[in-house]
Amino acid sequence: MSAHSSGNGDKTGMAQQTAQQSESPLPGGAAKKWRAGVLGATGLVGQRLVKLLANHPWFELAEVAASERSSGKSYSEAVRWHLDGPIPESARSLVVKSLDPSLDCDFVFSALDSSVAGGAEEDFARAGYPVVSNSKNHRMDPDVPLLIPEVNAAHLDAIPTQQKNRGYGSGFIVTNPNCSTAGLVLVLKPLADAFGLEKVFAVTLQAVSGAGYPGVASMDIHANVIPFISGEEEKMESEPQKLLGKWDGARFIDAGLGLSAHCNRVPVLEGHIECISVSLKKIACLKEVRETLRNFEVDAKLASLPSAIRNPVVVLDEDDRPQPRRDVYAGNGMAAVVGRVRECPLLDIKLTLLSHNLVRGAAGAALLNAELLAARGFLNHRSTLAESDIAQPVSQ
Image 1 (cartoon, rainbow, N blue to C red):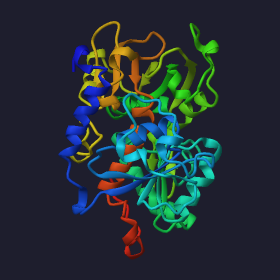
Image 2: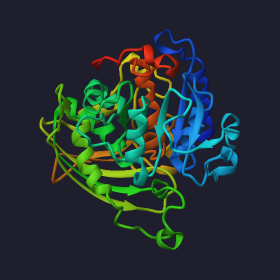
Image 3: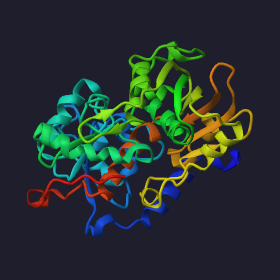
């Protein structure tokens, strides 16, 4: 893909996505769409999920839930809408419910603040709901998959163990990683497979939308850089270990990488830039590294998921790319865009990558996780849940 075709057209990209989605049949011979609920639906990530669920070929938005102060209002009354375009018609009149695990839906997305997400997600899983979480609370739990479908789909094999350990019955929790981890690991995966990884050094330039709304005060971030994001470096240094590691049937085994991260907030609206240096186990020239990234391709079954793209890493050759304003919507916001692949005098190679923090790093990641769960048979229609067996593990 050329720099000029990587694109930043939110409207164009979403129109293309809608066209692709309309052609996607339901997996496994399902007769009707799965009904989705969104917990934390009034927040920035929750809004993005509501928007992405509009006209989705497999899922329909059935319930929205949020804090008590929003409960009982219509969604259009409760939400302060921050995204381009109007609130989807399918969501406007939905009554916002409380975080009680009695929602009329088949599964839930969690876009809750970490202050309430941990207990609420466990309550829903215990009540039999599959929980697809964007929150940090359960990412590093020893029996909870931390999932990027293109990277570690086989980690879904942990779900029956989680259900048994916790007595969840048909419910479970699956999480997606931190917004800065998502783009990083998508780029590290093909390098790990081709050459092996020893050490990774990362410096991030993270968009203000990653802090939610209202986020960082304008007097703090305007014409400024803040070299601290609470908890971010710790997430970047721990989550890739689990994502690139393995499930051995009883627990997750870390990848054993040397990882160091510096995280900075910058006055950019959307898109996290990461400057990384990598030490490889095998010697590789720059051409081999570029081609490995450019040719990273998911299998046909994964590529058939409505939100997936066949080549999730885009490599640009221009010296001054990627740039958030020009490249953040590559692959409908689901691609990691790589540029400036060059030799590193300290490690082996260094490069710059960009990913959309609210799509690839949050709402789009959760949606893709739910699509994989549906395709692998882990989602059921709750009207028949009592008659269904717990889903069996399916290896990648």
